[in-house]
Image (cartoon, rainbow, N blue to C red):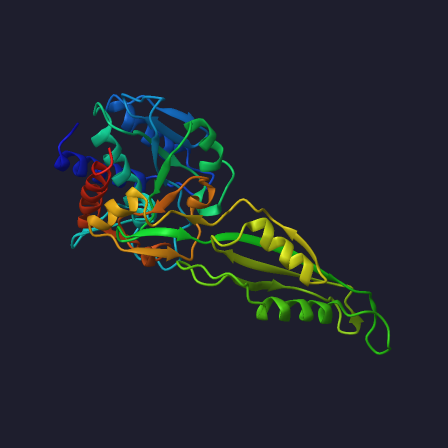
Amino acid sequence: MKDLKTLQKDALQLLKGLIRIESLSKEEDKTAELLNSFFVERGVPTHRLKNNVWAFNQHFDKNKPTILLNSHHDTVKPNPGYTNDPFDPMEKDGKLFGLGSNDAGGCLVSLIATFLHFYDKENMKYNFVIAATAEEEISGYDGLELVYPQLGPIDFAIVGEPTLMDIAVAEKGLMVLDCVAQGKSGHAAREEGDNAIYKAIDDINWIRNYKFEKISPHLGPMKMSVTIINAGYQHNVVPENCPFTIDVRITEEYRNEDVLRIIEDNIQSKVTPRSVRLRPSFIDPNHALVHAAIKHGAKTYGSPTTSDQALIPVPSVKMGPGNSGRSHTANEFIWLSEIEEGIDRYIKVLSEMV
């Protein structure tokens, strides 16, 4: 078990190494290699599947419950507004600049440092597994969802995303629905056809005005937004179909399948879900992890955005250094102090439990 200063120093150097390597979603092979080497150099056996790397604590006991520490090492494309080199980990005025520094490199290296703190500790109440995963930014199938079955039974999880070290005790799920209002083509000058745009308008008005009965105490009401629509190809032809897309943000009060059924029962258009796998997340406010985090200064909140938390079928929180408001911005950065404090806080919170 290394001292805190060494863990913090190593985490910073690892984050700089990650920033130097381009790791867009589905192209994370080189950052996976770096992460794998980082563990191996410290005597930690690793497992790898595609661009995902994970490891278990030294004294893993299958008869004990397991805590998952998870964050991602893929990034989005650099924002066009960058004036710095997005792949140059530049330190300036107490900040570390670089693509992925805040989302979610700072979280990932802080969780890795935390894992190493507990790695060789004996007689703990819990096991630990650290998973550095791919494709989070695109909700891909070859990230956490691919490796989760390889991790064994998980009792609860911490998902590293920039939250200022507060904890999201609930997170909205996401369904994207591709809809098609179907009519009949005809000449616009005559009383012909059945205009699909008008049918779509009726359905969109229902989507705009419908209020789901159950309201989450953490996330508020459900939200549906029509975000894409397209119809017609010629001014004098009544369109026979009108495709549109609904973005549905789901609270823990509903199952994705139930929301889908309500929508299908109330609109005329044909509805095709892209997937129902990104589910809302929730942890009991009385869970020991929540109490430990609050004891060490965390505030609780409900997150309207979706992360890999949606793929974890056990209680989980979203918690990490950095500020979500900096994610995907030009000249992305994280404060060096946020990484140091993040590691310290993670260790203190989990020490309350193990």
